[in-house]
Amino acid sequence: MGKTFAEKALGRAAGYDVVANQVVTVEPDWCMSHDNGAPIARTFKKIGVKNVWKPERIVFILDHAVPAPSSDHAVNHKEVREFVAEQGVKHFYDVTSDGGVCHQKMCEEGFALPGLIMVGSDSHTCTYGAYGAFSTGIGRSEMAAAWATGKIWFKVPESMKVVVTGKFKPGVSAKDFILKFIGDVRADGADYMSVEFHGEGIENMSIAERMTLCNMGIEFGAKNAVCRPDQKVLDAIKKNAKCDRWEPLWADEDAVYAAEYHYDLGDIEPGVAKPHKVDNYGPISEVKGTKIHEAFLGSCTNGRIEDLRAAAAIMKGKKVAVRTIVIPASWIVYRQAMKEGLLDVFLDSGCVICNPGCGPCMGNHEGILAPTEAAISTANRNFKGRMGDKESFIYLASPMMVAASALKGEISDPREAL
Amino acid sequence: MSEILKGRAWVFGDDVDTDLIYHNKYLAETDPKNMPQYAFEYYPGKEHFAKEVKPGDFVVAGKNFGCGSSREHAVYCIEYAGVPVVLAETCSRIYYRNAINNGYPVLFVKGISEAIKEGKIKDGDQLEVELSTGTIKDVTSGNEFHGDAVSDLENDIMQAGGLMEYLKAQAAAKK
Image (cartoon, rainbow over all chains, first blue to last red; front, side, top):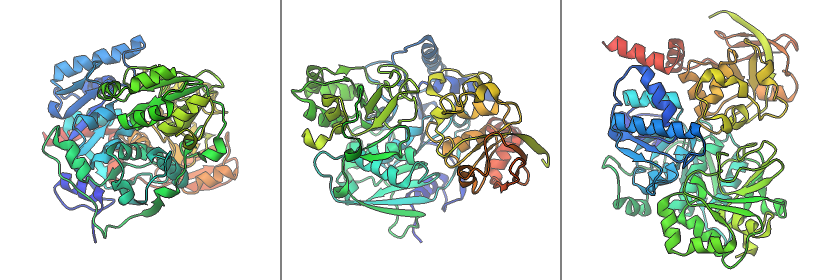
């Protein structure tokens, strides 16, 4: 009987053969925290251990509310800086032009690597599966414990296999696919499971698109989501891999799965997640013409250069009809967009460009919604009130659909805007 | 552990996300004792939960309770309100780990999602819950439900009083 990716990755980390449902204790390769590093540091101090187990394995990236929009946020940032200095934490991305959204930084800085065990005190830590890592989100207490002991327990998850063939038609992208998929399997479809994306449809995707898929893994309950680390990944990590502990791992042909799904990307059409659940899928035909008041292009789901290019291609030479907020996922992305002239395209269209960070995604700042307002957003969650008032509405969509909708002030079919 | 807990049921549906349980606008709060005042503020029809919940009351929910964010506030705001246990068909992985790691019990109850939809267990019903056996009696409706036991490691962590206490005990045992 063959092994799944999760069995191989956790087995490699444990140092012995493991099978699904076995409980293992492993040492994480990286522990990532963002602004919530401050309360974690406070919890850590209560454990009674003086030093973190390996300061070189800990990463802090300030992104949730940067620069600090309130004194509470400022206090958190200050405590993170103090903890970094006190513990000699090696990898720290402060509020500087080296920063960005934590998940984007973990990938572009060479932390996300094949076969590694990566944990983060953020639920979208599953993003790094795009590089073949076993990565998953954990809570604050658990992160404090991991810093103290260098250990974390996992039940080896059962696995779901998603086989993807074909190619997207113009105007359709990875976001449309994953929203449709979540609509099909529902928000708890992969609860506790490791989700593997297989097939030529995935091989044809850019790493950025694979990040979009893996990022949304948590939205259907996955413990982790992963794509095969192919040549594209190996080429990408060559330039700046942060360690040499990595090893490309992938599931055996005869691995055993708890569930299996097949999709042809050619069948996918533009679609959204309607308020207030990510699995509340609606094809464009159902939501076209819905009035919106704000458009948001950015986040760890869709704030990469590929996303900005796709949106700019639609916006070029046209004016937005509603306030449109563009937030590149990192300053590297920002600079690249500047070089390519994309920022000029957005500014000429009337968009507002904010500094890299999470922005309005979880309602901290930079685009809070008023009662009765609706937003179309490239982010990953549309929970009630997430971007502001509890009587506001969020539609999740692809960068192309957000761009097309921003131009009309209503949800619009990107295929008609190409 | 054969004690029978008695209290009122606060009944919720499927996929209750972490923003509905504890909205992100209160995330800067880090003292668990201050968190119950914000519990379920965004859940339609349960805005009064925070004011009216009494120690000993139960949170009853359907599938995938606590989906979404990794915030532990969503556990604390219920735990510190004095709710002794969450009874749900299933809950999200991170929510479950956060609960266990804080020594807080979540009982998985087969069929309760459907029972909620069919009105077999209603908001305001009086419940009797025996944690050691997983038996849940709805005294108001007369219906009975059964929860699953937790795994050994999870039970060890909970018995120790949470992950921190468990780790301290492990470290002491080594010395």
